[in-house]
Length: 156
Image 1: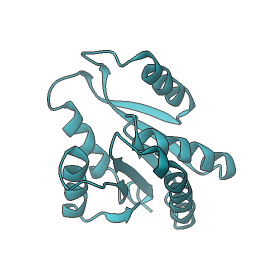
Image 2: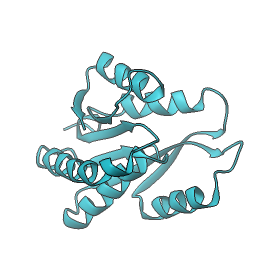
Image 3: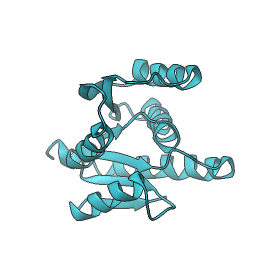
Image 4: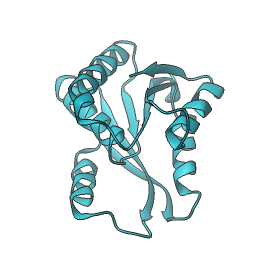
């Protein structure tokens, strides 16, 4: 299996309603387990708040049970124009320490950085797990791009 065929990315909204979290965590863990059985063992996350961080934590839990599983963080830039709030920064630093690999789309932030990050996530994956409940916005645009590129889609 080529690297792309062994890779799954996660796309979703930054806001996850609190009442959706238990169901979403269970669905993520089931999807990751099923994909690992198919040979997909590299899971790429963008590191953002909301769905991306919930997905990254699910990958880390799955990795504790299956040593083949890897968490790859693809972050938009090394130096954001505005530093995130302290709780968000702490969460991201914790994820970076626990990830198997961390890479950056570019050094400094610019207006196109997030779109470049989303495209790179899709372009390096064969499967996309999506949590998208609105038909507009960056998550919906990225899901559309994933469909256009022929990725296998798993909707949560």
